[in-house]
Length: 283
Image (cartoon, rainbow, N blue to C red):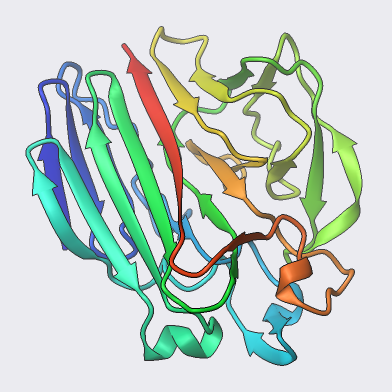
């Protein structure tokens, strides 16, 4: 099921499944800014990543001496969210733990997601709440895909030199960093830039990136505040994902407990934490 909202400048659509952003369209130009989810290229559009980012080593982790299995990117993206509030220009969804989720992740949680249209675009806020009696360990990430063309570029507000980590064919981080080819704070989206999968950035200053083109004056400005940033698409595809991550894939150095995983966060019992990103459109 799709849920919709609108304001004077934009229309919004969100899927019930995974509370996945399906559309952000300009009323002025009719231009769609969100990737269509073409299954022949990449079926996703904007999955929510919780309580892990990427893949665990052997798809397993240990918590308090007990081993659990969890698939790539966690447990919420392939399950329905419940719409709990709808206004003319906003939609709010929630997902909570259930018997199935507790088998993979032994915490009671609530994940609330609000999509709020603005005059210039869209703000997305996520609130994670620990409803358990114990400290909850988790990561969180967003994965929105934006329409673009090969030859467009991503401009960083404050970084002229960046290094990326890489994952191997098993989606596990390797112990090496590689320089990112940049000119004037810009990364060009070439046909082959993602041949070795995502760019995974951690040592950066920017809290804003822009998707721009040499062929028109439109731009997508993306504000975020995360310690990791993924940039990814299928090779030679007409979209790019800008992914603020509060966490990161496993590497091959197996940790004895989830609490020691790189980038992991914690919430005490009954505490909440908010994560957000905002996109502003210039036409």
